[in-house]
Length: 407
Image 1 (cartoon, rainbow, N blue to C red):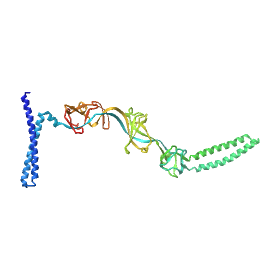
Image 2 (cartoon, rainbow, N blue to C red; image 1 turned 180 degrees about the horizontal axis):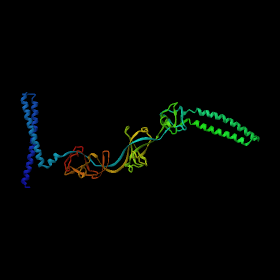
Image 3 (cartoon, rainbow, N blue to C red; image 1 turned 120 degrees about the vertical axis):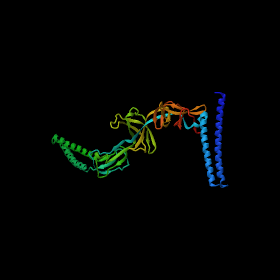
Image 4 (tube, helix red, strand yellow; image 1 turned 90 degrees about the horizontal axis):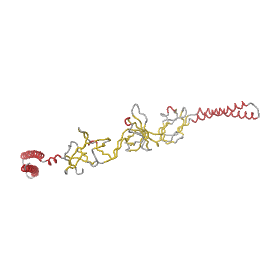
């Protein structure tokens, strides 16, 4: 290009800038004039019609100045690239990319259960309740007497057999004494002894039957349900609804049903986070038992997680179970909302320093797992890159950027 042409172009840009500045000066002078007139109105009163005419005149001047400013800005944008870039620079927020451990969890609903929970049952057919020795909420020990059933009939039978036993024992002693004196026969002696043995066996059975009226605790724990009263009938068939339940809260577990498609991702030993949202508490544990069959109705398998004894845990309490099925050390992650798509695939916008200016650059990436708001990036980003996390919508490759002083 000839030197004269270059000089002419520069002169035109200088002239436009001067005109641009002079228009801003005129606009400022007009604003000052309005301020002076408004202030001076307290000293010298003018007619209302003159004020309206002057105000209308100033508004027309302001409108013309605004139109001229827009016209000059457009001309400068076409003739001066640096001015155009400064005018189009977009305010963004930046976040440096760093490496961290990325974990993915399967979130399920679980339930707290006790490993040791029993419904107290009678050893026999049951009977009418005569005495109850425990109240709901009491701590009981294994073997402690909890309840006594009516055994009056059995005790009467025992007394009758005891009377008969005394008689046959007396007859046996006499037969043995006679036999020692060689009086009587051996058959009579053996028959008398057999009568004694039979009644003793009958007495033992009756004593055992009478003992069945005493109901003892099978395990140690808390009697969290005492749902029976004196006079009611207690039997094995009604023990779960009308009886006593003992819960041992020292040994607890959390159970959950895992969908079939995670069969090969969840195993015994998998890390688990058990959350109790109501009290904002999280317990770390591992899968202790994995079911061997698939439920045909729910297409899921069960797992058990042993948890330590805690006053915050109750049987049948609902929990949030997070099972870790994937982990990656030194991974690059990004907020999921920064991911964009076009016809070539997935990408993010990053900030680059070029010729002393911040420039937006389009960066294609390959993504991995997603958990919550964090997306794993397999390739395309590295530590030290600067990700545009605010104002990335509508950015184009090469657009100049500006940031807050804190960015």
